[in-house]
Amino acid sequence: MDHAKKVLDQHKFPSFGGIKCRVLPFIRHKVEPSAAKKSTNTQLFVKNLPKEWTHEDLWSAFEKIGKVVSAKVSVDPEFNSRGYGFVQFDSEASMQKAIEEMSKNEVNGCKLSVCEYVSKLERTGTAKPRCSTNLYVKNFPQPDFTEQELQSCFA
Image (cartoon, rainbow, N blue to C red):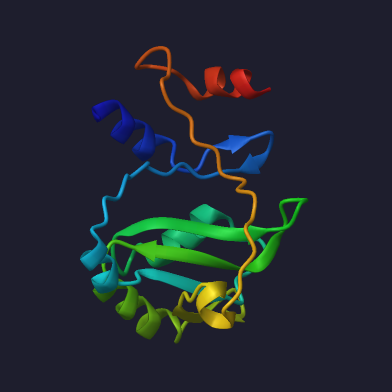
């Protein structure tokens, strides 16, 4: 557990082949049927992002408000920003505070639009399954496995 925390702290936004990536903890949620109805949304949809922003820039902008669990800038197949992204907080209170505070902000000449994330299924009643581009890597061969060693595994 200490090794995973160290990796997350030191290598949250590594670059692979010049492309900025993000590293997230794997959290297995055990949801009881009754708890599912009570669960709260802590994820935001943010649009009008500066085109040059990376996942790390989005994280940095929102971490001033509360504990960020995840920040992702949506990118096209050439890894260019689509101008929107998603931020997830550890609490609904932080999410609500972010909506209030960040909706007033202008960043690099862009007026951010921040709102609670609503899934396509909830918005339209339909959603088609997608192939994920996220990769989960586990069972590193030694505790001090380096970024260069990880890169050579996937080169």
